[in-house]
Image 1 (cartoon, one colour):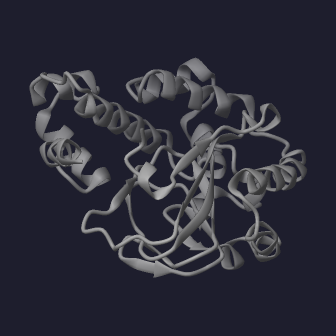
Image 2 (cartoon, rainbow, N blue to C red):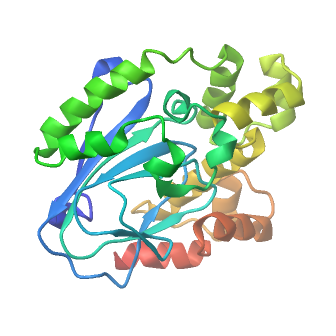
Length: 267
């Protein structure tokens, strides 16, 4: 059970037609929630998202935002989310490199952006859509949202095959594939592939690889039977220097590996 289940949090899978684009939808509904001392962590994985908010403002990295539709650009660091009062929201997470059809701009221009969709996506009628979704139940909202997304995403010409292949290889290797070997195996020069990553993903292959290594490290730290030393864990996550591992982990998550593990044990 998800730790936010008491607040009505649910994950929903996309329809088959959108499965290549969307990781999941999520919904959360509760009539009242006290402001928690601990923030919820939204870890970066290279994707992008939209959040339709039908109730109280939400706090992202200590900034309260009240827009009816929020844009989450690709992020390089963990976002801290806090909520209070009445909560009623619907979110959609796009897979890495699959949000371009919505943004109509290189994703490097919205890297680390958390902002109102009116400002970032003025070409999309997000406020009208939020108004249409507001009175509906979560599953009905998702059905309407999927209809709108299918219309938009059917116009997507798609990224070049070399980009998709590079993203897939980095994910499968948990970010441990040497970047130079990646360029050689894909058959593209470094600058050419980095331009594709900047456009479709918003970050470089090296930055995306780091997120995958940190994701693996988080998974290892959360494992119920985790007994490995920090040195062994660093090696499993692709780091040969423990100090470098701790530095990168804290740079992305905002906590040291030890602090993160203690937080998970408390939760």
